Amino acid sequence: MEILQKFTSIGLDDIGKANFMNRIDTKFPLRTELLFEKILPEILNDYFIVEISGLRYMEYKTVYFDTPDNMFLNAHHNGKLDRYKVRKRMYVDTKTSFLEVKHKNNKGKTKKKRIEIMTDLDKIFPEEYEFLSKHIPCNPNLLNPVIENHFHRITLVKKDMDERCTIDCELGFTDENLTHETDNFAMVELKHEAGAPKSPLRKALARYGVKQSGFSKYCIGRTINNQKGIKTNLFKVKIRMLQKRLNNAL
Image 1 (cartoon, helix red, strand yellow):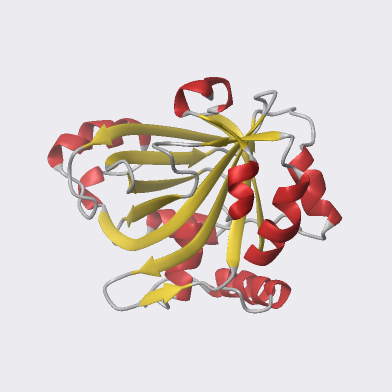
Image 2 (image 1 turned 120 degrees about the vertical axis):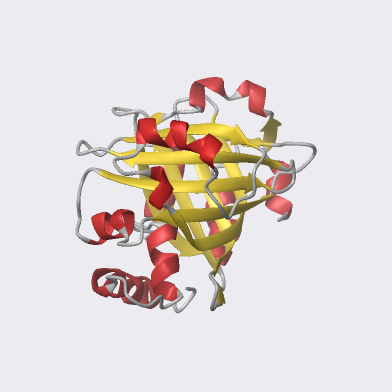
C-alpha cells in the first residue's frame, strides 16, 4: 500500500468534471501483486488519488436486489443490451449510504441514478419506491436482497479530468448460505465519456498483458456462491476463463 501514498491527492469536491454519470465503463481483472508492484508505479505522475478523511483505500459494502424471477440477472446472462442493476451501497468509512440504479443501454453507455438514504441496506422501503419507479422497468415492491459484496476501493482521476478509475480489492460475497472471499484479485474499471483518448493506465495494463473483460460483481458473486435456481452457465464459463488467466485468484 506504500505506493498509494506517493500519488498526489485530491478531495471529492475537486473531481466534479470526472464524475461521469453518463459514461462508458471498461473493466480489467488482474492479480493484486501486478497492480501494486508494476501498474501503479508506472502511472504515478498521470493521476490524482482521491483522499477522504485521510483515507486513500476505502471500504464499501453493497447489497444487490432482484425480482423473484431474477429479471436483472437473466438480462445479463442472456446478453440483453438494455439492462439494470439495483443496489444499496454504504461507504463504510464515512457512514453514508445510497440507493442506486445502474442502467446500461443498447449503445453501451452506463447511466447511474442515486439518492442518499438513511435506511437499512437489506430492504427496499416504501419511501424509496417512488425513486425506483422512475428508473426501473418493474414494480419496486417485487425486489428482494439477493447478494451482498464488500471490497476496498482506490479511486484515481486522470490529471486532465477526462477519465476516472476505480480499483476494487479484497472482494468478497455473502448471501444467507455462504461467504466467499477472493484471493489476490483486483478489478480496474475505467470510466470516461465516449470519445475520450486512450489513457496511460490502459496503456500500462496492455504492456503487462492485462486484457479487458466484462465482469459484473453482481453476476459473478451470485455464481461463485452457487445460488440455486438461477441461470449461470455463461457466467461459469467466464469464471473458468478468469481463473485460468489469474491463476485461481477468484
